[in-house]
Image (cartoon, rainbow, N blue to C red; front, side):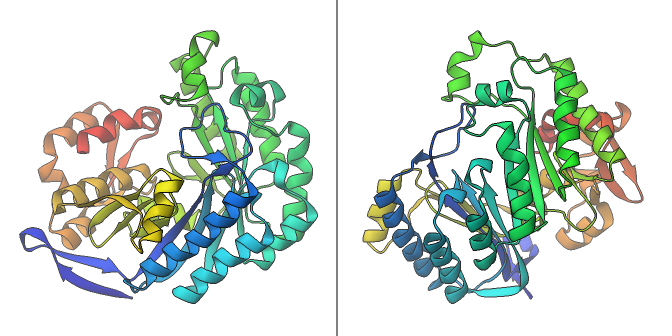
Length: 389
């Protein structure tokens, strides 16, 4: 399923005809206090209109491109707010307008408060075979600080209903670095998550983003210091490893065979398309982003135009830099000889000084011809990866 094309400087780049698809559902009951993603309040009539226009965007894009979809991811916002009718329309449109790989991974982000028996059954009917459940914490005080609308008590029956009526392929999202969070409370959340027997766990340190509630109010909270955050991260790695979750990416852990295929497509530098306001795409050596405004989104589609705010062709050097940065996020690292053969680019030579510096400091290692971050580099990875940009 591959064909080759010539790109800048005489390079030959292999471009996949298979890609991953992201659908942005921008509606929420309430915006979380840490969230910087584009989202708007849920209103039934607006959601009805949005689904109609989302179908238009999919149809308009598919008339110009010929791809096979290998993964589908519905994120937000809160896509679990969608009715069966809305979700069914989206999935049906995708299947009508694209070729679909055999047994595609289809993920739905879910808020625990939206889980019930009927919803779980409907998700399965629509073809959802992976659920990403936004738990964040098992402590109600922490959930309140984060602005989450669920409490601990909704988590347990939610997981059981999903397992019984939709899928056992459940990923749990957890957050550390929350104001007033201690290492003991963090460990408790981790152990409670493991006891639910998910197939996958994603965990991120709370990031204070400009324009969010927590950014505006951060002087009112006491955040764990950097040393405590680092300790929490390495607690995460240790506890999950002892419970048969292997780390395959800086922030992601899975039981064997349950890695996120959709997110691996991003980290492997593969092509993907995004539909909906504020969504991003990468295909044909272009980075594309849609308007982060639902009404501008509607306006473009009324004019039979894709709702693209920016489209930029990237150079081969940018592409290679992105491949290196994303590849180093993966625990398997970057196979140096294979990379050189595929892209005619010698990482060891081109980044000789950077690599030498981090090899000597113990932040990088080369094992079996693979360039990898070491364990001690994982928590400070952003500063290291930035030197490959």
